[in-house]
Length: 118
Ligand SMILES: N[C@@H](CCC(=O)N[C@@H](CS)C(=O)NCC(=O)O)C(=O)O
Ligand code: FES
Image (cartoon, rainbow, N blue to C red; front, side, top):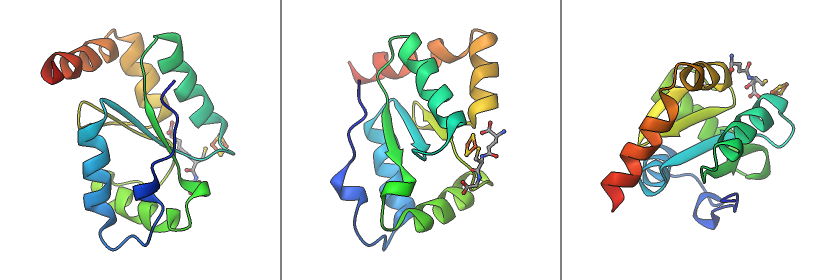
């Protein structure tokens, strides 16, 4: 499963927003998470159960994680975790993502991204 940490995210966050934008354009599914957060674990499990690869950024493992949370606040209106992006777009937190999945809308978004990258 794609759960490796990016070293490019583990340095002074001069432009955290652009680093986040790069990460979400490089990966179909990105979960900004904390290792201590069970909502985050549930969100990861949702994608695992769908056999969908995701990139996870564990903000509590990054020296500048706080700055990334500030950037996520600017981009999404909340600095809570998880913050989940699919196909380059913010889809919400854990609750929103589970709801999208229940409505059958999550997998189509992931597939759109796969098709785009072919
Ligand atoms: N309904 C939101 C709840 C998000 C939330 O409250 N997250 C808490 C942890 S479970 C949080 O981010 N607290 C602030 C922090 O960790 O910086 C979701 O499903 O994502
Ligand atoms: S579930 Fe409590 S920190 Fe996220």
